[in-house]
Length: 74
Image (cartoon, rainbow, N blue to C red; front, side):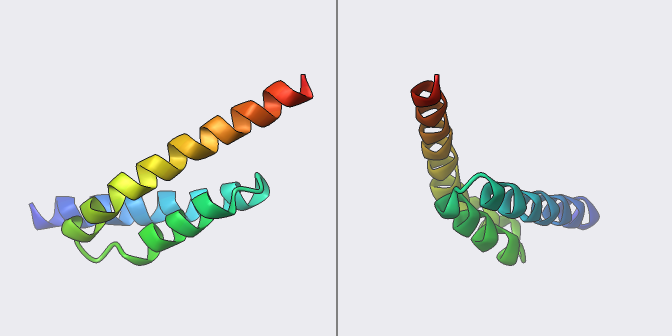
């Protein structure tokens, strides 16, 4: 079980790192900051779970913002 948790934590860290890069390219600094916090705090499942509500909220806000920009550009 510990090995599975470690694998998940590694996958979360890698995914968060990718989100940091992509969000920077999309001019989404708040998402980039939240992803960096997630990337650097993956020592335990509990740490990750504590960050997820704020991270999810930031993802939703970023998607809404990107949709609004897309709509404004036509």
